[in-house]
Image 1 (cartoon, rainbow, N blue to C red):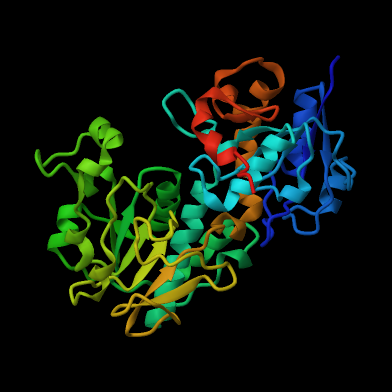
Image 2 (cartoon, helix red, strand yellow):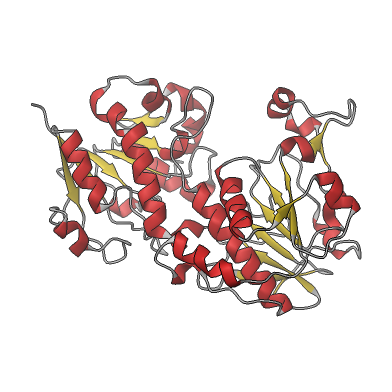
Length: 405
């Protein structure tokens, strides 16, 4: 039997990510299900599951995983840690030609590496198979409420990372009393499902967009705005999903209708530069801009939330933006709005997030990766094969080219 060795690599990007692709218990299940697979675990001081937990499950952590065939990580692998001639799976953040990862992409080509990007593993309908968006939504919504409580003094929340599991966090909601706050939730994917889970656990009542705009309430409410509620073709006055996905620049955003009725924005909508922003930077200086707390879980700097001035951190998750100047300030000032823009939100619940990711990996990807040759799902997510950019990603040729000095 031809053996395949899978290596779980330690995360090298700083700040260190504490998630992992497979938990100790999942590693045991993988080798039981696939007798042709061996698993190596690279020793890590930062992983949410300790070396001792992997050892107890029967996997002796090692320093060198260079004899593994397939290497599983989470975040971008530093260039200095890349092992030539291997197959890697991780979130590379290179498919949009992100300038900050260009050297990583060039190194992958130079080292004859095969890169399969988790983000690109999709079903036929385009649905992503793997992701941490649900946990980003849960933690982001919690952090947004945490920030609003800090700003108003109306209630207090513990940070999510203080809890071992998501369910322990939710137990604290049972005694929480929220003021009559109005919340907009945007998006329709995994992130928004996580946000809505927090709304459900807190028993915040959902109201229709029309009722939300036309009424005030003496209890907390939210409205959920998907693309069809946010965007409209100005010529037809309607939303067409296929047209919008093909030509979003032909649409306008109607979020301004909600600005004067909203206290907290929890943003989980997909965005790229062709899609209209929710509002413009100058809007925050308007007296009608009621929003004082924004949890930008999508977290695109200067993106759908144009006053997102860049990432905050788990340690210091909230910063202020001055309404008059647009400059970054301390949070919770009367002259500013508060922005929660943590880029690695699932790290606050890493054990739950890792377990969920590993389950999806085992059920949806590993059988295709190990036993099926030329599987279209794997092939479509393979950006680079043995140091060569694949045909689907040929547009990255200039991005991967090392400029002559």
